[in-house]
Length: 419
Ligand code: NDP
Image (cartoon, protein in one colour):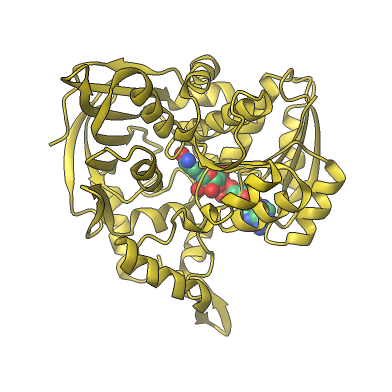
């Protein structure tokens, strides 16, 4: 019997909880805890009579270590699924260590306050040392490796689609398709249309921070950083069609460079429409993407938080979004001394997701891997103490679970490569 504590009750958590409740035999008891209790109660109510999973709810401020420890000690979960925001990663990891519970999340740590001088000092040193300037990186969470290992606990980092499934695709390619991998291109295409002039598909604050940052890629053992959106390619995606995509910095590049050390180049591309980019540039130019508080009519406000309040809630996009996502990895490398290429990807339909769980495909493609990752930990299929990213585990049972629970893989041995 396992008990799971889910922290957060937004777009991704709603999908993960609903998917867990479809397989009650693995998730017999689940507690949904978030900042706003009424949202947890509404989600629990929507599942009443539809699942055998026993659901309870709780209010928690996950920035507060003591509140977390109190909740974890009273609920006694086997696993904490952290599906709130990356700002809380370290506090929740600390609480899991204090209580002896396994941990997982879907995005790597970044600070809410990027002006905090203590964080800034470490950040600026890392920018110079590592050579990329995104606000997020793995070092903060990797610093807990020894503590988790000594406690016999697992922290599974970044178990959404990207990061997450993309790394399982890399582990699968390494295990079954290649002796050595030379290049990895991760392609994230969202061909969905929600009809709004501008909206983000997951938390706007985190999303806009990510896509407005300089791009970077890994080449021959070091980072190459380029201005945001300065590398553009066009690609013809299966079931979506031709789209413009742009090179971004992305968290899984960092762990893949470490765990598949022979790789010569790793790049990440995401599709954006011209209209999205024009809106984002305009918002950036007028200061709306800033994370530094300003004084407005006697009150301090953070521009990007104010913008978040104005933009459509990503969870509300479900009924309006039509079209498909296509996310995957293209590899080049060698097998048995011969050059080969390989593409593994998933296509997901926004409206199909909405019919099944009431959410659009971006929440779905993150929530389903989170559920499948939890399944791997709870069933002991992934059983390695310490702090680990997805490519460090056996990809086979995870990809089988994704095939079964809504995100089946597709393969192509002769893909068009990205120049
Ligand atoms: P949402 O903004 O929809 O949900 C965030 C949830 O966290 C809300 O329920 C919010 O509560 C809750 N929350 C925020 N702060 C706290 C706090 N201090 N204590 C407790 N709860 C809190 O975000 P998404 O669901 O879109 O994204 C969730 C996570 O998934 C993010 O970390 C995001 O980066 C990641 N993600 C990962 C992807 C991947 O492929 N790996 C893709 C997409 C997202 P309230 O509503 O009350 O404020």
